[in-house]
Amino acid sequence: MARGKKVAASNGNGSASNGGANLGFEAILWKAADKLRSNMDAGEYKHVVLGLIFLKYISDAFETRRETLLSMTAEGADPEDRDEYVSEGFFWVPQEARWSFLLSKAKLPEIGRVLDDALLAIEKENPTLKGVLPKEYARPTLDKTKLGELVDLIGTIGFKEKGDRSRDILGRVFEYFLGQFASAEGKKGGQFYTPRCVVRVLVEMMEPYRGRVYDPCCGSAGMFVQSDEFIKAHGGNRNDLSVFGQESNPTTWRLARMNLAIRGIEGNLGPQHGDTFLNDYHKDLKADFVIANPPFNMKDWGGENLRSDVRWKYGIPPAGNANYGWIQHMISHLAPTGMAGFVMANGSLASNQSGEGDIRKAIVEDDLVDCIIALPGQLFYSTQIPVCMWFLSRDKSGKPTGGGKSLRKREGETLFIDARKVGSMVDRTHKEFSDDDIKKIAETYHSWRGEEGFPAYEDIPGFCKGTTLEEIRGYGHALTPGRYVGAEDLDEDDERFEEKMRRLVATSREQMEEGKRLDAAIVANLEALGYGR
Image (cartoon, rainbow, N blue to C red; front, side, top):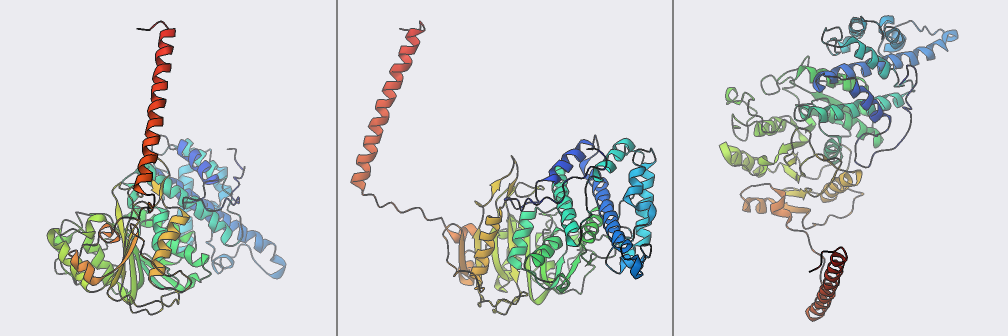
């Protein structure tokens, strides 16, 4: 792409049927950017590209605001007054960090140092970004010719739109690139990225309209972003939601901070990266919503040093598997009417090893389990094994939710959904939920909870079943949905036996006669070719 030629960023293709980001200009950009990667590892290249996209966005947003101020100089507006930008939610971008300046240096060998200086200047002028931006463009191992070409390429993205429109464009690009990097990195990539369709199921089920939302292993902040999109889609106010999170990986923590910043979401992700188990930054937080995708079957989590931790109300989790450490950590952070929705390895549903069965029994007997969903395999970049979703509720009494909806009493009840056959393959190795798939799962849950505006709930054999605590006890407190939902109903066959047999015999005779005809034709063709008997 030639420098200065704008990609049609404002095209509106609508949501893709697979529930992912729009596959328009983002895919073209990705293909072009990936060509420039050369021999660089995807995990390293990720921060190079996303840092530049972030820089381009805040520069474009600054210039948009500056143009507005220039048109208002007669009214006393000053386009060089920092407060004119910060007071309206814009980042102040100094001269040496503006994209026009960076673009003029793209072909120079010192472009790496120029970019690092630009990012340092932005952090200095905007304290909320301190320690967030990647400042490693001058390192010798980074090909400066390729870097200059990448600056040219990122320059083709036009973010000069008013209001939330430019953020939406940026969000699409950022999210699409995150997904592509997760795919390129494979298992390692899954540590920072949860597929969008999975996050959407969690958010559509929980409906976080207002209150405190917490993710103890927030990765690149996808849970928070999708919660914000849910609020906007349903006419809510993002100021009614407070965001709290923590992430142990330093580069992923910075990625999360950028992901929130570009969308104007204020979140408390702690002063820096940190281990949630060993150094809980939000120890006193009681959240209305806990939404998470913890690492599956984590072995080295420091459990042997936390045997007497106050979070283990239901039993000490095994030192060699963090699953029930994560579950109890999330429960410990729930407000009296709070809800938790999270992804877990399937083993958490029925394992009895190392005391896990006793912990699960105690959680079930405390009537916290609201819904369990079995998910299909191949949804995640990090693993091909099937996983599940847990939904816990502190209060099943029927009180209104955060969105003000009235519910029916669900005390002593749990909904099981078997969604293993839901979704469709989008490539050889990955499956996704469509918008209709997500709607089907979420509406089943809302109907079962008795929410207004949803049809009356009915059990569907093979898909969903509302059960009682007594029934779960009968299965030894195992929570595998397949045990409860049963097999799907087959269409009733009302054809009489005698009639069916006559029809099948007649069809069989026709097929045998056709077989004889084909055999004769093959023999005749062989004889014509000189291969007769």
